[in-house]
Amino acid sequence: MILGLLAVAQPNRGEDRKKIESMKVAYLTEQLSLSPAEAEKFWPVYNEFSKSTKRMRQDGMKRVFGPLKDGKTMSDEESGQLLSEYIYHVKEMQAAELKLINDLKNILPAAKIIKLRMAEEGFKRRMIYRLRGGDRRGRN
Image (cartoon, rainbow, N blue to C red; front, top):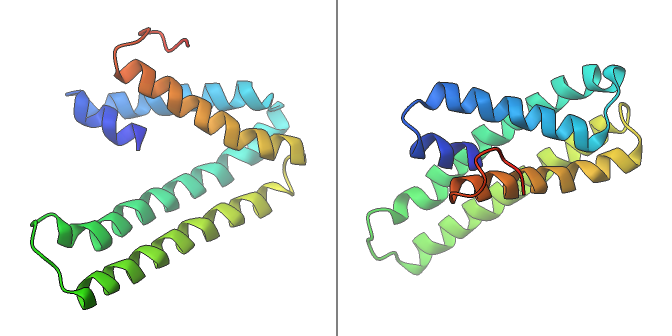
């Protein structure tokens, strides 16, 4: 989500996206205190999770919210179908998150897996702060 917001706000999308990804890697690595051995195993698993959930979010948003863009009024049946699509999307995202956690159990101690979620939220807050015109260096 943050990547999409910054990409729209900046004219040089590819470079900005790479810069943000680099910042995220550094931030998460630091916050989780990943050893080189842990990082070597962690990043491929995390990157695959990120790619798959990005696709899920994009596809899910198109399926669920695409029909609402027109501003047309929907019947109860159509609304019910969209709600079912949304529920499916939520379950799909939850399944991906659970898969990540289970995959990481073989790579990281439980404490670092728990810290991962907090670190992801911290990074999002930092990026939102920057997007809103806060400290340009990304400090809170």
